[in-house]
Image 1: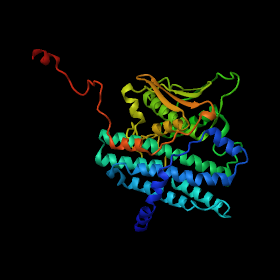
Image 2: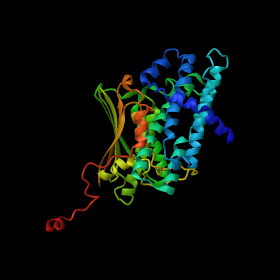
Image 3: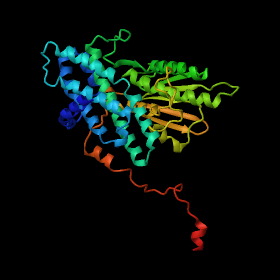
Image 4: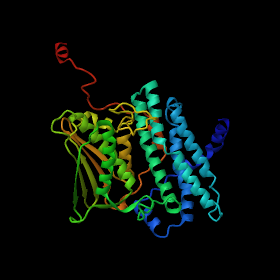
Length: 403
């Protein structure tokens, strides 16, 4: 532990140095073109040995602006330790030239180790937030800062893994023979309907573990560009799967809990895939009873969940509970300039729509940058409400009139 503290102190100037640089966002088209045209491992090495420390340093500087009592939680300290160790390991390649006969292979192995180390960052950080909430609760200022930070922290993690996966899949031995046409993690001809079906089947299997039944699925496609052709996209199938799996889980849970005693059985879940000039959209519609309008924003809050908190030691995949599913799914959509929105009718059901860019040239990474604007957000609390709010103060009209 003392050695770790010494290394941390010794490398703080490096963290500050790299955090002064802004990350360099890439588009899906750029990822694709680099991977297609005789991808050069040396070029990738030269780019990543600086870009990865920049992305790590930006988020590491931001972590330190969180409340001390949150940073002191065991799970959060563990995540910090992982990030520090990964940063130290990347610095070892700062001055190693690609001509070094062992540099490229050592770098590849280091990236794989870092990726494996960071596998449990999301549930571990989620556990840290739960630990803090149980001990201290939340005030609006802390809650706002945690929401702001986690959006940026998890987006940074998505981008960090994207870069690592592209490099290891293109130049390592972990090429997936089941997807020989993929360029790294990108499918140039991703069948959206197939990903929808895969996500549904996986969510159905999880749902049946809890409820012994699951709603059936109906898929429709509408291709405004070429009406007779199935809709394909240049995209990362694993990202789309993640979003859809979460939406199907939510839809199945709501449908089962509302209709568990219905003699008519479970109503269908409907998926509609559409492609226009600018947007590729996927809508998931359920008849699970919907959500009140005032609660919609809460569903994207990391500190809110309608389900009991699951155990990290559970052998079953949790159907819900950490409160991270929807907000992180929205980050995946926004990562390449898309979005995820919910439209609900209380008493009926919910439409969840994933919006993606139709063109890979417009699908640029959306990355957080540590700068003065970000710093100010942590120093200034949420502003006072400048709209009337009848729930906060009851006015006694008759009493005022009598005066």
